[in-house]
Length: 453
Image 1 (tube, rainbow, N blue to C red):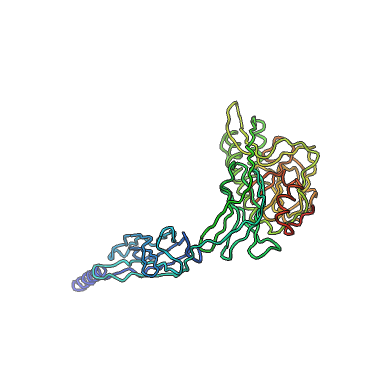
Image 2 (tube, one colour):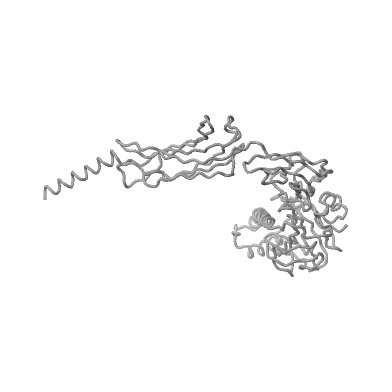
């Protein structure tokens, strides 16, 4: 028995000696994921390294081109000791970086290698070789060409326009950037190869159009941009005051909260109202931007957009509203449509031909319909008392789609009408104007726009 015990102790001791002296970690797994098919001025690269047994030791990312070898990222970790078989160090790591001419000035056109070296956890008497993985990518440093073809690019603050242009063969993405908004370009029907157009707008709260740019990007992330606006008309936001009272806030908060399960009772009538006016408004705006992504790549309309007739305009587009309660300003929001008042439950016409992309209850808008007219142009009809269409319906200009009402954040029966371009509310008045459509859109787009003058 004593000999057996000594034998076991000796075996354990030898095992421990082996662990300390020789137990190395297994080879780490390496994945290299470029964010583009080529390296440009700043191409994103994601490197993932994993070793779940003893954990990671070191990571080195290098850019190699001919005699050029430059380290662009490094990370060090402490693996578990070789004898601690029950412990694990850092099992995985992710390195995100940008590779290109901006960070490696000596980089030249041609090809380059992104090489990743992952060190292995060693032992007292064993230092295993590191593991290496690499990918080879073309290096492209010249951005695609872009030429503006249309003239008289006049646009107002909060207004819309069209631009026609030509891009080089290497372009994979193009359009107009205006502040936080991007308006994608599309092939110009009947145009020459590379000819494109974009419907765009200057946001209602942007009073300087100098940063509005036509942007073209290639697969390597190289970007060319050019200014193209010939004339810009400022239209400062008007001011308006909304005076809140308990009766109005009780009416709208009880309805909206009962129809919007994600809202949480704040325990205060005013706080519940502000939650709707601020937070829910932002969520509704984000949802409308998502709807814009579903817009048809075709013009679905042929005539000017139609306003609701025999109505009084109670609130205009781009009013900055101050909300006053008990003598104090408690909030400020922008009104981005037209409020049209008629008789109670008056029939609402579709402003133009299109397809219904939403019909239901939408937060601050209450019962709401959104119609897509193609190429990012959509119209919204809010506060309805009834909805007479459903998602997917094709509608005709002037077709009744519902009745005016006071649902959502409405104090009385009316229609909130909004025109949106890729989710950005724009001035509806322009789209009602036959001459504006002819001069600003038809003359540039030609036969690509089937507009009946």
